[in-house]
Length: 380
View 1 (spheres, helix red, strand yellow):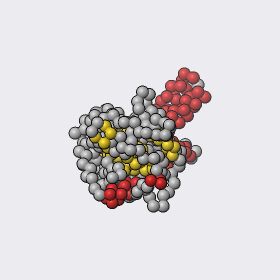
View 2: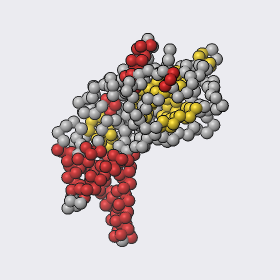
View 3: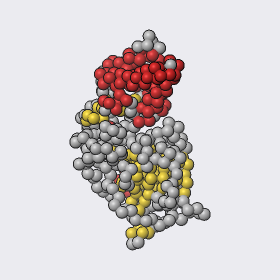
View 4: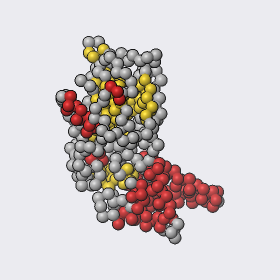
């Protein structure tokens, strides 16, 4: 059983589905072994993995997707109490500054703290009240922090409530009571497509227990990949564009790099893996690399591939994840990103990738990084 959070290392309550410290999902079940199939089966699996919504597990009764690991949204009571805690914290600090420095300085400090809380919640889902009650703000469609754009939208709606006799903000928060659906969204949540979940309580889920991917034991060194005049490859990926036929198969004409001959580690052949990005662009991978919004290799470590993905909403960290190929296949490791890295198996099962050690990714799986994703395929 998992006893500590794979993201922050804090102890986990027995049976917890989320870490109450950082909000990361807690996963405990063993990983099902990937079974090799025919070429057509692999292509079909890649088709399902290429779009995480295709073939996804049915949403549980909570109204949230299976990736939320059974966490439930909360009603109006906890939401109002969490907002009250936030207001009390801001008021206490502002009162102290008022006594020591006067009303102008107190007003400035109150505004700065309020803005800081908005940014904090947008980036992590946390506020003072959310931490006290074990709540987290998240995107409606995935267990990630709302992000600055959605966080700002929520804050603007609440701020508009302040203009209504100074109490309209309570009506905005209390509008959660008007939502009879399972998501329990207030007016500000609906505008920003956000939800608030209780990370201390697990609810019913239609998905089977989610498991961490099998860890990589000892990663064998990979022979350098030949490249014309360079020691590696750099790919810059633009905004996402729809692909008429999806990205179920990768042809030689759609690859962004020439497929190298498989390197050999001792007596074992290191496979060449094709990564198909959510833009439809494909590239071959034969060694270690990094991916993110503006990734930088770790000094002193070998890096054959640097993949930069355009991300206006900044759901990606600068260096979001490390990846690579060895004789046992493709692996990925989170780089301490803000929104995490998740592997979606061909079966639809979601596996959270830790930052402490690499995790195996079978052919036909999809790796989600923030709002972006890429499919993994090992040509046979």
